[in-house]
Length: 227
Image (cartoon, rainbow, N blue to C red; front, top):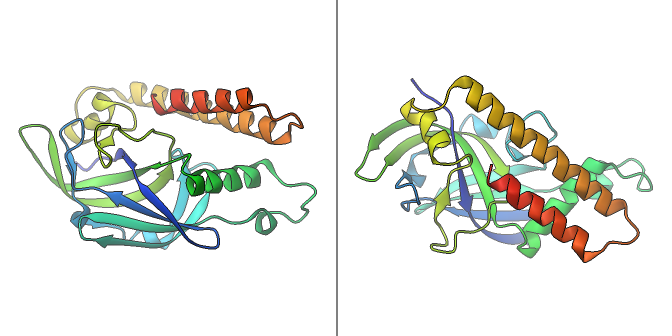
């Protein structure tokens, strides 16, 4: 039976035009769990029918951007993401919405390198077990998300799992967690995401933007990345 899985990946980013960021995702390396996700095996046909760029896998919220191009180049998957401007998202620039500010904030985080990670949700359609883990040969891309997982310091292109080793592998190997475990973990992540959004909104509205407040936000995001 095919199951959905996720993988968080460190990326190289490059601004290639007005509000467009290019993500270069190196895939064909063995990650810390001993798995390999083959770039050459990605199928993004259905994904490109609605190519939104989500925040923290939250499909119930408005997207952060739109993927205008997605392709495979050698052993990497690449994507160009367009982030709308505050003016495009607001009918009144004197009353900009919280969501518009979050989208703008995310764009600048990737542009400046404050963020350097994304996550893909996918269905493995062909894989085999190896001595160290799983070799995912073919997979269908379901969604593409911004995440705040820090770059692995041992290997630039090394990947980690969204919810830890047991949770991610249980989707593929059909072991470990129960449905109640999964629901509980998703609930924790959604709650943490809401808290981060509120902290960012309060920071943006504040007339006294202290560095310590921004550090609190970053610390909260780091906690979210570990859920």
